[in-house]
Image (cartoon, rainbow, N blue to C red; front, side):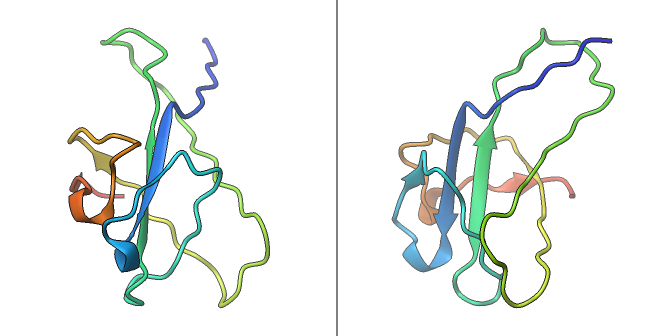
Length: 102
C-alpha cells in the first residue's frame, strides 16, 4: 500500500455578511455559526495525486483549531463541490452549490 500526503493546491472561503468579497489564499479560515448572518464556507481543492481509476482505500482530512474557541463546540460539515471555482474570484454571491451528504 502506498501512502500519499497531499496538500491543498487552491483554497478560499466565503462570508455571508460580505457577499462580494474574495478570501482566496488566506492563511487560515475563521468559522462562524450558521443562522447568525455571518455563515462562512471554506473551499479546498486538492490536485489528484494518482491516475483516474485508482481505488482510494482510506482518506483523512485533518482540521486544527488555532486560538481559543468561545461558545462551546463546533460542528463542521464537509460536502463535495462538483462545479468549478477559482481561488481568486470566489465569493458568497457566486459560490458553487454543494452536492451529496456529509
